[in-house]
Length: 474
Image 1 (spheres, rainbow, N blue to C red):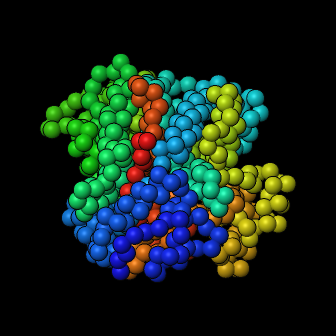
Image 2 (cartoon, one colour; image 1 turned 30 degrees about the horizontal axis):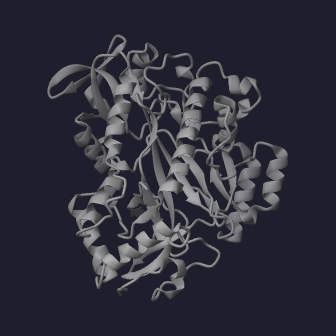
């Protein structure tokens, strides 16, 4: 199927395209300049069949060996376009948020002023899986505990962009965003528009973040990976090539006094900065024993002789219950009002809130506090009654292990499925990087798409995929 012109203000006129009732479609929720760009994009396809176009883009991705979790990384060829004004507002809010989150991490491993002030309850931290007490009082080398943040942004039925989740451990997606852009641009001769912001600034921002993390230390910067068993192994290799650094595993590291050394190119070198991309994200395991990476690095980290990007313990700030307190963090640490709101998060550790949540459970989404990749999420409006009842029993038994959020009517975007253009739900994995030049957002990031009809979970680990994201400069 092909069309000569795509009118985003009236999606119902597109042959075979049926927008979802009550859901905003990104092509229709845009200013006139972006609307014109969507029209130009579809006109540029001319008589090309959507299925052929999509197959060409997917073939280009496959030829580059792009995979996630040992499965092909699925790509949709229709880019999402964000206007300059909306991006400036979003960028300001996301950088503000990451500055506050890093202030929170520093405070939690230091004076804990926000707890003393009664803004964040102590019990919230006590239940956070990724708090590392061994790092309390340890000096920070560099400018931030979490120099690279991945924030998941969604647009609801009211048209407002909100942060659904914060990811400050080992956020992935930048390499996939770059691969998607290269594949789609290669299928569009004479395109894209000259006014599109280029996202390859991401590599320079990460390089600057790694340099900032070094401080006054001398030694090598390396990327620490699990190797091919890691689901994001493609991205690890892409980053290492672009940054000009070596990939090591824990088997390549050893400790000498309060230093960490590694085998690089057959010789032993001192390591000063570790770009951490392993699945092991704790220094101590659930039994209280040091993990392999903990035994290798904790002494050097506490001595200020080793820096991580991102630091162990930074995950305390992407705990799903902590997410509910970010607006208070912004006010407490920055003295500012939040520029981009969060999706409301209900603290089930408060008995009155727990009962209110149970009373309206069918309107809500329940998540494990420390889950990731969409695992364990119950969208109660779409779940079987017996699953909802099990969910109620679980949160009554262990309210501190879960959070609840309103079900967001996440926006859709035209997506090619089975050779046809159909609406599918999307979010935006946006990236914010802290370095010597301050805190900056990468233009665009990776739009993630759920390919199943009505599916709301966009993670690649849950059969989702990616779209290119065009940010316009003016």
